[in-house]
Amino acid sequence: MKSDFKKLIPSYSAKHGEFSVVTVPPLQFLMIDGHGDPNSAQAYKDALTTLYPVAYKLKFFSKNELDKDYGVMPLEALWWADDMESFTSARDKSQWDWTLMNLVPDWITHEHFDAAREVVAKKGEAPALDELRLGPLEEGMSVQTLHIGSYDDEAPVLEEMHNSFIPGQSLVMTGKHHEIYLGDPRRTAPEKLRTILRQPVMPVAG
Image 1 (cartoon, rainbow, N blue to C red):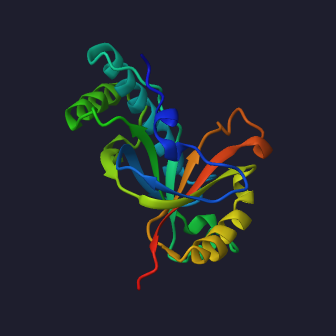
Image 2: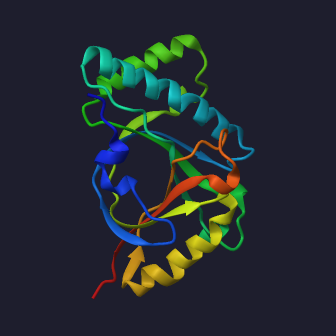
């Protein structure tokens, strides 16, 4: 039976127009770090081109060799900057740092990852393969919502999350801004894109 982690992991569900506090379990991802505007930076394009060949190689290895089938998960990214206003009021994308990610199940080992990377390397179509890694992410308590619309229209939602909802719940931001892209921007009109916006938090001390 094919596992659908979007349904099996509750934190892959969020409601539009509503902030919720969730507990995200420890998860394992393919990851590539980079810097710069995602619309123009070559590093971002190289990371995208590299991530999915390895993700699909692992999926088919798991299905054929381990008898454990699962759906390849959507693209995710962590975003941060020295000045977090570059995400909200300023929207200066050239200042953004990012980690592109793709969830893989916990039964995928580093040995499986190394083998998949070797196969993909032989095809010569994954320019950021040396930067790709397999690693854990533990976010724990987080605030999230579903944004429907263009990525450039996220700023007011993030401002409300950061400046109103999170302080109003006696919480403070801890980890990096996290986005989960439920829609494919290549096939979806900007106004119909669905993105989970997540911010790890912790209770205010005292």
